[in-house]
Amino acid sequence: MTRARASRLRIFLATAALGFAGGGFLLLRPHPLDSPRDLLLSVLVRERTEYAPHYSNAGFARIERDMSEAEVQDLVGQPLDKVETTSVHGEQQWLVRYSRPRGDASFWERNVLYGYGGRVLAKSSGLFID
Image (cartoon, rainbow, N blue to C red; front, side, top):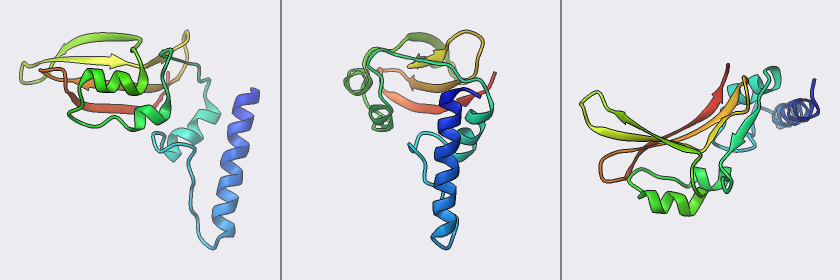
């Protein structure tokens, strides 16, 4: 087990123990972007994530629907890449990635979907398991 995985496992177990000690199970997460399931799975899989140069989880958490691309970049910087897509209704959209795997590995996914006019339609985050 790598040092990072062992550290995450210790944090997870300590958090779980604190939750039980308080009279009920309360799972405290390091960041609201990541589900308890994803945090637990990250200990078990080989996770190697490359983030955009000025990316931060705190900035990504502040992204909201209908923000402009400039507002998003003020929070998390330039993305790694931008892919043009089409919605099921034939509308042009752009998927912007702020993370990707390093090699053939699982990674923490951080994406923003923009619609016509360059406004945020949605964002997605979680552990992508390869």
